[in-house]
Length: 142
Image (cartoon, rainbow, N blue to C red; front, side, top):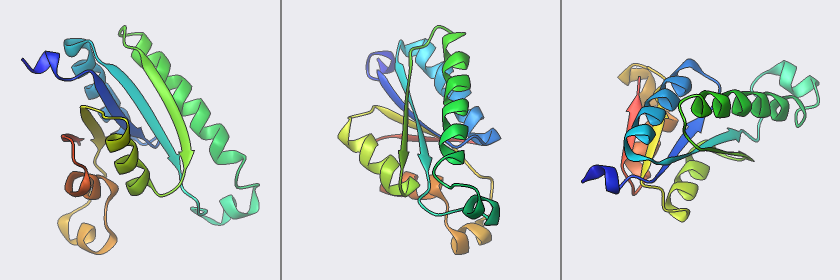
């Protein structure tokens, strides 16, 4: 029954180990359901550190994103899964939520950062926000 319902999976990626774990779990689900995976890499609109501010900010993150998405596509193709990549700039929480709802995905598979509950209360978390704000099922992978 569930196999017939999951056809489009959204996987937000940022190059971290947790996002790769999320991709691996999404690949497993996609194999069982014959689903298509869309990988979403969001480049934040603000520099993460001083080096990003000095190096031409729009060039370096774009290169990193393309390199990571190529490796993700290869990883999915090795398991026989169709992988579509999308790289955009913006706020991760807003962009993931908007794309998930607009393109009618059946499932979002996102990696957790592994923060404790106290830090999460003060700093916030993209995966936590997606779980609470997204209208479709969300699977958080640790």
